[in-house]
Length: 397
Image (tube, rainbow, N blue to C red; front, side, top):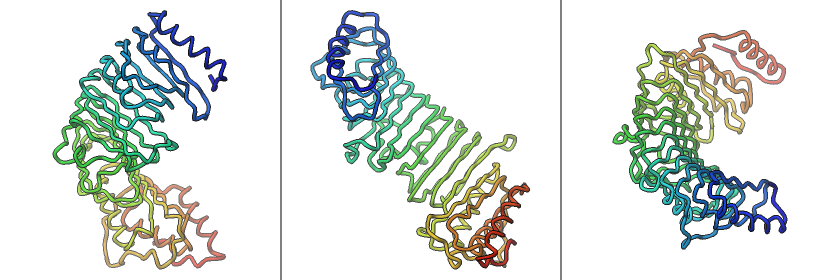
């Protein structure tokens, strides 16, 4: 329902305790207040008396502190809270009282500072989904995530737009049944060592790993897994050093404004086709030497050369002048890497000369297996659109 008036609130406050106390076979309770209001409906504490409850979904509600309240429902399997105000003590009491719980979703909730998921309280937990609200009034407070649930199969942690405010302090790092792990804007604590040479066996069943704008990988990112099939990494504002051994990979995605230092990317997919998509930004604010940038790009493409590579290169929002992009030395030979698709965005270049030099450099280190008619006509169109106003240089090599 939309946010009710005072009369409706009064009726709900009387009706919910009746449902909880007298309908002993209630298994699903779903109460959602829609809209953009920041107000909360105070959920009556009698909801904890619904002994047979298996699924609880709330939106736009508030749990009052229940330190002396006994949680009578013991069979809860699904807890889904959206825009709910709930404090640490209440959340921990619900989790500790329901050993059968399998699915926990906390979406844009307020009041929590520490998210503790322990094996003692949740030894049946399969999915933990935590998403923070970027408009949270307490967004500047540090929060911690402590996970010790070996039964987990899916972990989703989305810190929204509050990077460096989230920390991952697991009691132990072993997740023998985890198949999917997604972390966005999560600060990995040094103690966690989730991705290091000493923890390559933490995820023996992990098939999908996605790391978006998460910190803690700057010094060392080592991943060795025979189970991973999809790997996605997005970083911004820092460079990672990586050694990756994923023999059964099927898809790899990487996006960054820094070229990574990949010492190795080992696979054994000689008989299987796998794909990689690379999305890079040519940012003159953080590039001291364009020549070294192309050499790092070449190193990365060679590491991925066993895959079908598609690469997209955009420029920063600033105007790139002619003298910023220098041609690669003519007397140096590069082992060009075959790619399926190469796209260099024209946006941001001050002249056709700067853009053509950049594209020429790209084709020195890699080549497109199939240059279709569309790509050729598009290059000619861009070239002709600049002839009347800009000196576009020597054209294509």
